Amino acid sequence: MLADFACDPGQSRGRLHPEEESAHRSAFQRDRDRIIHSSAFRRLKHKTQVFVEHEGDYFRTRLTHSIEVGQVARTISGVLGLNSDLTEAVALAHDLGHTPFGHTGEDALAECMAPWGGFDHNAQAIKIVTMLERHYADFNGLNLTWETLEGLAKHNGPVTGDLPLALADYNARHDLELSTYASAEAQVAAIADDVAYNNHDLDDGLRAGLFNEEQIRELPIIGACYAAVDAKYPDLDFIRRRHEALRRVFGVMVEDVITESRRLITAADPHSVADVRGAGRQLVRFSPDMWADLKVIRAFFFKHMYRHWKVRRTRRKAAQIVREMFDIFFADPGMLPDGWQGWAMSGDEAKRARVIADYIAGMTDRFALDEHRKLVDPMSLG
Image 1 (cartoon, rainbow, N blue to C red):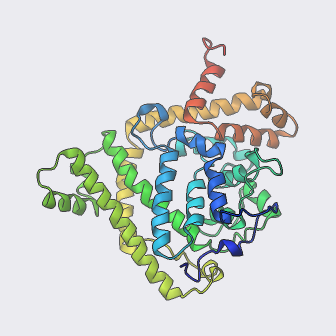
Image 2 (tube, rainbow, N blue to C red):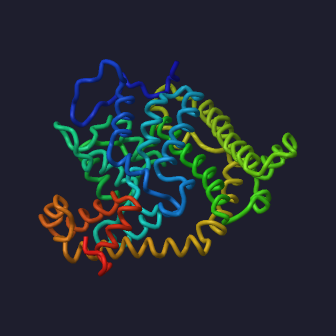
Image 3 (cartoon, rainbow, N blue to C red):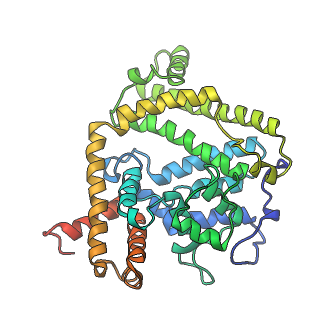
């Protein structure tokens, strides 16, 4: 049974391009399936977050991260009485707009695009699912429901001020009511992202040797989880010990979200999804104590992981690759592949820049490394 304030697929605001609905799947299940079958979703397999694709098979990619976010989101959504299919659709699509090389690639591309409105991965995700995916006979994009698109646009809260161009363009055709909060389902997808990346950054950082167990045992939450494992399993080998501790960290975060969200929802007493959108605050969130603890953990990550000298070296090279490709293609759009050339050369400088940004943003780490090599290495004539 869904809560009164959950999104009902039978009451969906529909799609930009009307379609006959499926006899066997709800509108939100159909959205989820279209996302999973999209080219952009498959490319997440070789897009990374902190570590570059070639650095190891065990580090998370954008694809494995998105799957983890979807799993956490379905769990929380089900406990809160929400529509898990919509939650999962937003969770699986939330990273589609990311560039190669994680946030480093995004920062570099935003710098290149500064004269033409910048670059934002959330807006790029909207652009991908509404225009850049081109497989269906009747429309560009995936023609997702209003609720899924709203969740992609607003899962982190209302979008105000100057809108990224890609989001503004679509919103002018299909009003996503950007000034309100998103559905509770989209809010769950956003918090599930936080839960997943906090947990896997711990795991990936340990695997990479950027910090060790003794260091993180000094951190809130984590130290108590290690102590609980050691008390119950005093002779556990280090691999199982780490796994047992980190899955407890995972569980503590999920339990906190559920408890705090139930408290906030009870206080707000929403009786419809409209009440959630008009509540004036996120209703799905961490408790203040948990948020304070996570800030301490994130500060540790910035010092010992994101700003580690090995990571900084990789980030510098990754940013250089993105900037050099952009400059080369902008100076000579005739070097773009067939298809992209025509779009880039059919308008003014702003359009050319946006087409080049779309091309680069869609690259995987592996493809970006190879494309850059072909562009700048005199020994590569491919």
